[in-house]
Length: 97
Image (cartoon, rainbow, N blue to C red; front, side, top):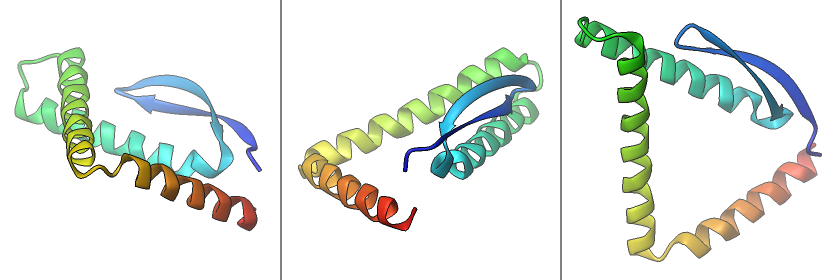
């Protein structure tokens, strides 16, 4: 099932209300923790920068990582295989709900 739930997460000390799929809640909370950890790391490394700068640098870090992954998958011709795997995973998760 694709049940949704409302959660509130804190990113950089600010609350954000989200509507998420129940099965994705753990992943979202884990990702939020990683983001906040990265922001804190930038704040320690670049103490002269404000929180907005640290949030921007965190976003850039994740965007570059994503771009690298996309490039690697495109070079390997894996996009179709990933779609197939995602479909298989979705089907498997639906059978476990």
